[in-house]
Each structure stands twice: as structure tokens, then as C-alpha cells.
Length: 214
Length: 216
Image (cartoon, rainbow over all chains, first blue to last red; front, side, top):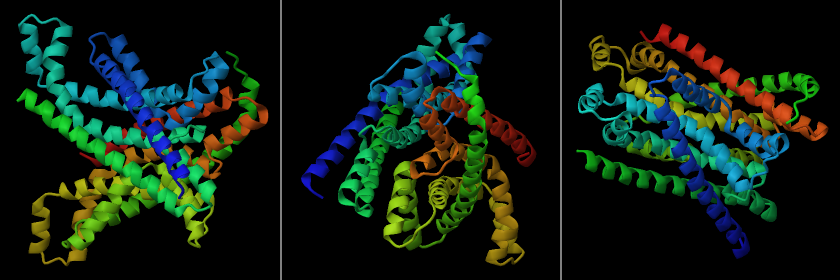
């Protein structure tokens, strides 16, 4: 492979990393917003959050990407930059999966902790911030770590829309060299290394957070 | 926003054709992932690390890399190696292989959850190794893991649109074909989006019933 082609792959890695970080941030925000809403005391809030989860978890990520790239501009006139369109589709979809993690971890906190907060006169927001979340967040890290790997794998889908991510650069190199075994092996290895680094980071984060609680 | 019901009507015949292809891919992919996953799980239980390590590394690698790139790999590389499969067969193989690395973990958990007393009883009854697995351990393990396997069938369903990228005309492929011919994107993509939500919701209801009947 020539250096020009490697440069293409490097650009692809950069796009994939950018997309991963942006969509992970959006997914984290959606996860917490929807997950916390699912433990709300008003039924209508719980219902709407549950409806969101069912809809966005029910549909396929690739169909969602198609929808954001093709239907959103035509039907509503919102033409998004590819990076933001990809972020939106991935963040909303994976956020729905994440909201289940947040809800599960919040429900797993000992009810006595919540009652303790009520007895001490904490407001619901204070209870959430100072009692429930500090105990629930460390428990969320291992499932979130798995979800992050799923998200990394999901970022490859934007290449179908012609976005120049890592998978797309692989296709370009294949066309340039007329040879596929080598380049796809490299691409798969690069994804594997990124996934490995992510699990390491998440494990470190888990240790750090757990040290703060106990 | 314009919504054209006549476009939906025109798309429907294509939709049903695509649905059949999607369900076929799903059924075959599930079959491969269920059987291959069991093979991985059993290989991981062999006592020598010369089997455990390679299987562990390969499955970890397949699990942590995108299915889309694996699809391209199989679709473009297998012919270079002299093995030419149809696009559908390649897609089914890729999905089955990818998800076998997930079902493998499900089986492992199921096998680990069989109480040690069952193993000891099998030893006490002097059952052979094969018979212990076939008549005692696996029936109990598999019964426990059916709901978890079902969840992966739903995940697989949501990954079948990727087969479009290797020219298989499943739901999304038909929707794209229709859009390109009629210049109407909104209707077909929305119809299949809703179809995916409905199918996976129905499947999860079905699964919950199954779970109640199997795991008591």
C-alpha cells in the first residue's frame, strides 16, 4: 500500500473516532434523560419515555440512518451535515438501549436508600443527584462498556451513506488496489484495537468510580 | 411534509417480497448462530488451552469488529480464495458467524448455571461423557437460555438491513430500489422503519410468553 492510501485510512480512523465521541455523548445524554424519566412519579412521563425506548430500540440502526439522511431533508427540509446526521441517528438509537441500563441500575439501588433520602427531607432532584446516581452509576459502567463497543461497530454503518469513515476508506482502498483480503484485515484489526482501548478506558473508569463510593 | 399514500400502495408488493427475504436471512442466520455458538461454547470447555486460547481470541475478535466490515470481507475475499457463494449465502454466513460469538456466551452461562449436583449424579450413574452432555446437561442448559437466544434473534433482525450493502434485496434494499425508481424516499423508508418496530415488538411479546412457559 502506498502512503497516500494509508493517509486515506488515517482520515477514516479520525472520522470514526469523531463520530464515536459525538454519538457517545448524545447517547449518554439520552440514556440518562430517558432512563431517569422512566422512574418518574408521573405515569405520563414514564409512558412517554417507555414509548421512546420501544420505538428507537425497535427499529434498525441502518434504517434509522437512512431515515435521517434521506427522509429528514425531504419531509421536513432539515438538511444536516453528514457528521451530525450520523451522530443524531446513532445517538438516538443507542441512547434508547442505554436508557434501559440507567433504569435497571436506578431500580437496583436499595429502596431503603431512597426512603432515607425522603426521611431526611431531600427533594426528588436532590435524592437523584446525591443518593441514587452516585450509587447507580458505577453499576452502569460494565453494561455501558459493552454498549460503547456496539456503538463503535454501529459507526461503520455511516459508510453506507458515503461518509468517509474507517469502513469507507477500506472500500476505497479495495477499489484502488483491486485486492481485498489485506485491506479488510487491516480495517478489522484497527476496529479491534479501538474496541480494546475502549474496554481498557471503561475498566479504569469503573475502578475510579467504585473507589469513590466505598 | 408530504405523505403520498399511493406510493405506499405501490411499494407494498415489493415490501412483502423484501419481508420474505429478510425473514429467510433471519431464520438461516439464527440457525447458524445457534449451532456454531454451541460449538464455540463446548470448545471453550475443553481442558487444554491450545483450544481455548485460539477460540477465545477469534470469537472476541469477531464480536468486537463491525458486522458490516465482516460482510465486505466475506463478500470480496472469499471469491479471491476461490469460494464463490451467492450474496444471500454470504450474508447469512456473516450474520450467523457474528452472532455465534454472542450466543456462545449465552450457552456458557446456561451450562454454568446447571447445578453441580447434576454433574455428580451423572458420574454416580456412570453415564459416559457424551451421554452426560446429551441427556443431562444440555437439555437443562438450553431450556434456560432460550429467552436470551431469542433476544439475539431480535438483534439479528435489526442487523439484516446490512445485507443490502452486498446486493441482497431484503426490506431496506427493496425500499432503496423503489426510492431510486420513483424518487420517493419518505414513504418506503418510513414503512419499513415502522415494520421493524412492529415486528420486533411482536417478537418481544412472543418471547415473554415463551419465557414464562420455559423458565419456571
